[in-house]
Amino acid sequence: MKYLFGMVALLIISSCCNTEVKPHKITGLWKLESMKVRDTTSNSWNDYKGGMDGYLLYDGNSHVSLHLYEKGYETAGVEFPNFNDSIPLEALKHITKSYYYMGNYKVSEADSIVSHYKLSHSNPSEFGLTAERRFYFNGDTLVMQPVERKNSRLKLKWLKEK
Image 1 (cartoon, rainbow, N blue to C red):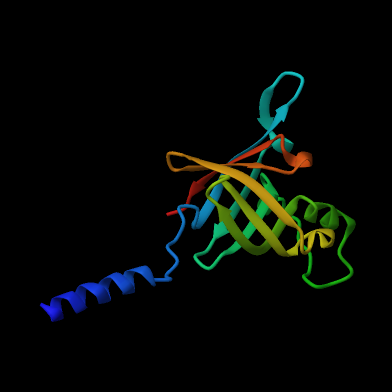
Image 2 (image 1 turned 30 degrees about the vertical axis):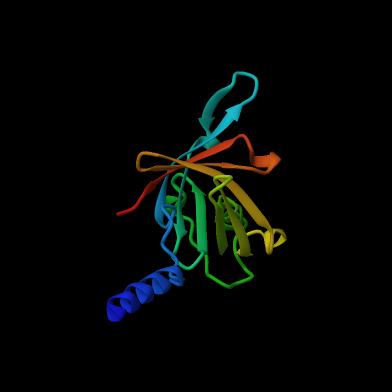
């Protein structure tokens, strides 16, 4: 009987002290399905900049990576050398159609908000800033809306990559 009691106590203690982090439903690779902007005069949703593509990655270790780009970005036929200061003006203009960052994230279940702490960014002025996104799931679609006022009219829908 003492043996049985000891085993039960050990199981209870080990289950209470289990610090393993379970992956959140948000974890994984997501492909942008749509990025819409709300027109405040007509209250309608329209494609942002004529349509966007991109990927969003949440790993199981609280890291986030985002890359957004205008539709057709990768097939525009623009070529330029990497890490070179003699990039043609046309290529420099093309680069501005791509937006990316990586960093750490934290999910607040109570508020349905995910915070992105940007460690690096395509825009140097955004290094170290935090972006907050309200989110919810609609079936297999992750729907996000920026919390900050300047981007609050955006709605992004993401499909999980298999």
